[in-house]
Amino acid sequence: MLGWAKFAHALPMKRALISLCLLLGACASPPPLPPEASPAPKDPVAAKLQDQYRQWRGVKYRLGGTTKNGVDCSAFTQITFRDQFATALSRTTAAQVKEGRWVGQGELLAGDLVFFKIGRSRHVGIYQGQGLFLHASTSQGVMLSSLKDPYWQAHYWTARRIL
Image 1 (cartoon, rainbow, N blue to C red):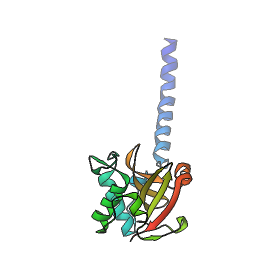
Image 2 (cartoon, rainbow, N blue to C red):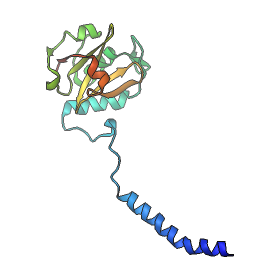
Image 3 (cartoon, helix red, strand yellow):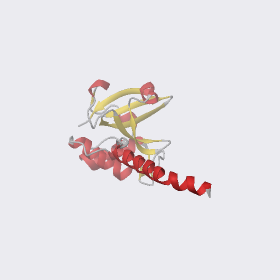
C-alpha cells in the first residue's frame, strides 16, 4: 500500500511536468523548412524553377534519358528551359556550356546554368537562387543541391547565362 501512496502522491507532479513539456514544445521554433518547401520566391524565374522541381523531384537519373521514367542532367536542363521558359537548349552538356554568355560564380542569377567537372565527366544544373541549384543527380535523381557544399565547390567549372 505504501508504494501506491507514493505513486498517487507523485501523479499530480507528473501531470504538471508533462503539461510543462507540452507547453514548451508548442512554443519552440519549428525546424527550418527544407529548400523544396520554402515559400514561393518573388523572382518569377525562381518560381518557375521551383514549379519544375515540384513536378520532377525524385525522378531517377538515367544516362540518355529524356522522360520522367529517367532523365540525365543535360536533358533535364533542356526540358526545363523548353517547358518553363520556351527557350531551346542543345541536348548535351558539351553543347550547353557553349550557349549564352559566361557569368562569374558571384554573379549568378536564377536560371543560370552551372557546370561541374567530375573526373572526365561533365555535369550541368540550373541555379535557383539562395545558393541552390536544381539538377538530375546520378545518385538521387532530380534534386536541389547547395553550391556551398564542399563536393560541388571542388568540382565547380563555370556558369552560363541563357535568359
